[in-house]
Length: 155
Image 1 (cartoon, helix red, strand yellow):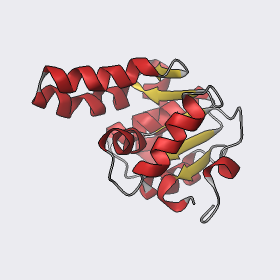
Image 2 (image 1 turned 30 degrees about the vertical axis):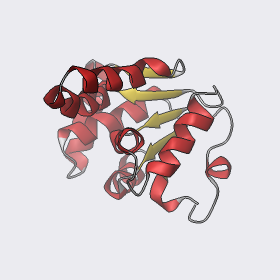
Image 3 (image 1 turned 180 degrees about the vertical axis):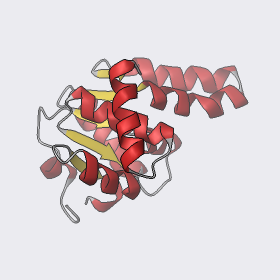
Image 4 (image 1 turned 45 degrees about the vertical axis):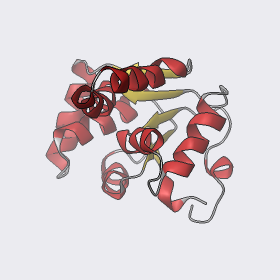
């Protein structure tokens, strides 16, 4: 995948589960993966080119700083969540929690990461988009059916 354009790694119509690291890079801007995250959200998710999901854990993770900063920051983060009509949230129900337990038993991932990876596996996403190398390694071990795209390695 290194050196390939994002469009060649993520085919039109491929269903995506997007990790918190990618959402946070998009919202923060100026981070190593921010440009690619912008391309992903603005050219692929916002246009409907690719259906996408995030875990409810990601919602929690992206709202922490805004709640520390105040109402304007909360409105911005929640505006992001409501802006992309093709972006759906996967709840952490029994099936996701069970899969996360299996992942935790087989890896050294922390619970939030295991829940997000479990969401990717359960959602039947075609591609798990992350900027976290540890999650790619773990996914390769416990969810070999899942293609993993690490943003900083693309393009």
